[in-house]
Image (cartoon, rainbow, N blue to C red; front, side):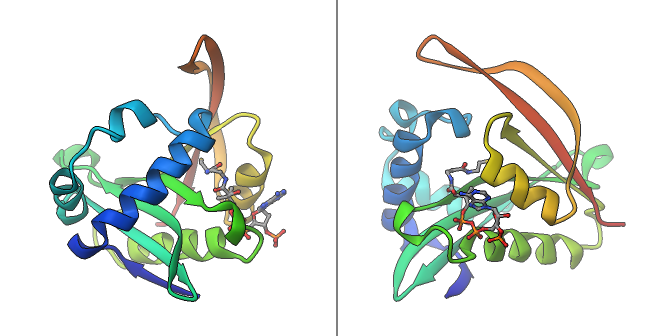
Length: 166
Ligand SMILES: CC(C)(COP(=O)(O)OP(=O)(O)OC[C@H]1O[C@@H](n2cnc3c(N)ncnc32)[C@H](O)[C@@H]1OP(=O)(O)O)[C@@H](O)C(=O)NCCC(=O)NCCS
């Protein structure tokens, strides 16, 4: 397995895996399939090139099996924080340690930064596999947000978690 930053040339495969994630797990992401299916490859290339975020992909036997994004804060008073978003591993690649490797990659990236002191993420309150992973990596929950997402008439609570690095 290989984890690398995704660039312009990965836009098409990134779009595909992202749409699979949004379709299969709408309750796990704030973005919607309906919104992202409209995005052009050019929009996705721009997203992958943004200086405000870095997206990594995990490849197994040459196939993109998992993705994760680290989002930076631009405001001076918030630059000590960064956000982990969009963690998704395709079903056929689950249980291989891909998510753990993607998470460790973004944690190491943040640790190597001179500004980031803590990492934040949100997770659907019932998502035990993801919560277990985050806790193992040292994240602790600091808030429970009721009805954080509304997906076709159903409400989902979210847990907010933080990992202090410095
Ligand atoms: C959650 C998800 C990312 C895990 O991906 P994965 O590559 O299968 O996870 P890994 O193999 O790296 O497992 C790492 C750890 O996560 C936990 N975990 C993963 N799958 C689990 C499961 N089905 N049940 C319980 N714990 C699980 C375990 O602690 C595991 O460590 P262990 O194997 O040493 O026990 C994946 O199931 C997924 O993409 N789910 C849908 C999208 C999603 O929920 N994303 C997170 C949004 S916040």
